[in-house]
Every structure is written in C-alpha cells, then in structure tokens.
Image (tube, rainbow, N blue to C red; front, top):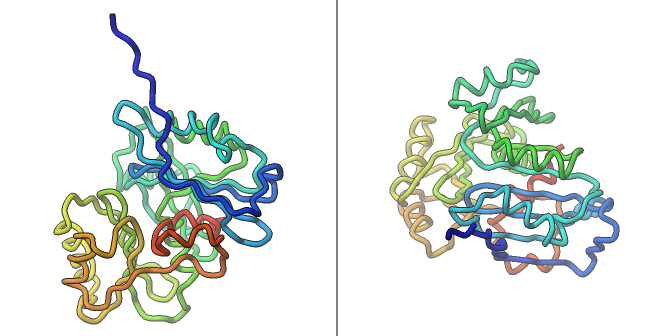
Length: 293
C-alpha cells in the first residue's frame, strides 16, 4: 500500500525581526520577495522610513516539492506571508527567460513575440509579464511559472511581478553616477551569474549565465569583458551574491581580476541592526525591490 509524500515545512535559514516591526499595521510596510532555485527570500521595509525591518530566508524546496507549494505552506505558517493588506508588494522571479528593449519600442500585447526571440516560451506552464524602468526608459519582458504567478495574483492582487535582473539593474543604476565610466557588476546565485555592465546609469550589457564550476564563472566574466573591450587588469568588477570571502568562486575571480570588490547594500535606504550579522553584499536584489515602482 503506497502512501502520499507529505511536503516538509520550509527550512528557515534566517528569521530576523526589528523590535519596531508592528505586524498589526501591515499597511505601514512594504513586502518584498525573491523566488528561484536558491530558495525564497522575504523582506519587509517600513514605507515611511525606507528602512528594512525584517528578513527571512528559506532553503530551496526538496525535489519532490515545488516553490509554489513552499509559498502555499508559508502562507499559513509565516507571520509575514500569512498577512495581507501591505502598502506595496513586489516579487522578483529568478530565471534566464527575459529580454530588455527600449521602452519607446515596447507595445503592450507583443510581449510573447519579444520573448520568443530569446526564449523558447512554453505557454502550457509559463506566463509572460513586463516591467518598465521609468527612470531608465527600458522595458523588461520575462516569463514566470504560471503556478507562481497565479498564486501571487490571488494572494496579493495589487502586487507586481518583476524579474530579478530588473531589481539588480534598478539598484545598481540608483547608486551609479551619471557620466561615470564603464563598470562590471556580478550577482552570483545558485549555479548562475548575472553580469551587468553600465556606463554611468545606462546599461550596455545584461545577461544571466549558468555555471557549474568556478572555471565556468570566470570564463563568462572574462568573455563579456573581452567582448566589450574591458580590461580585467584595469577595470573594476563589483560582486554581490551567494559566496564567501574564502570560497573557490571568489578565489578564482580574485586570481584573474585585479580590481575586484564586494558591493554595498542599495544606497539611501536604512537597515535594522538585526541585519548587521549578514554580509552587506548579499540580498542586494531583495533590498533593491524597494526601488522598483
């Protein structure tokens, strides 16, 4: 006699709360989520003070579970995801199914056609979405798991889906100076790296590459720099993401790139002292969702 497998409760890696967080008044706060193969991250920011006052991180679900199941369980178990009535909600999906185009060329209704140029869109289990960067005059078109998009729309009807690259782009552009020279930015996730090149505040390159070894990571980084005529011995590379100072990933980056440094949290925001135990170069996209309209 076979028995059905009961999904395990999501494993919390971090659960940080500022004493000022008052969940009896969710309308005073913004809720931010990032969802992908590395797991789920949840942030709460005080809307008036522009201050992050809570951060949860959950491990990626087991193979026999799914991210949507994880979210559904947390909707009943988590003090944050179990609430509605937030001032603003944003969810960033993490995948390689996206494209960017100048906002003046974007036409509503043509999203699938834009995306098919770069991604084998699967309408049976994917839905297509878009987000326009008002200050950058750029539109992002991306695919999301239909089950995830449906859950989000039902749970937070006024919330907005964006792509992880939009959060990264918005955050980096926010702390870049107009007219500044070109710079390379890396955001390292679970077996993938997002590479962004800006000249001042304007993006010249943005893409996500899969990798399984440190050698893959440095290959894609150097390849992009060479294609854009950037010099690993001279040009600065800023790194965010899921790596440690003594990791193989950081070691190989430091070996081949002379001017390598870790990035900061997004500027002009405040952060609870409860987050001080976390490296500043982690969770950048989660924080940067606060800058996405």
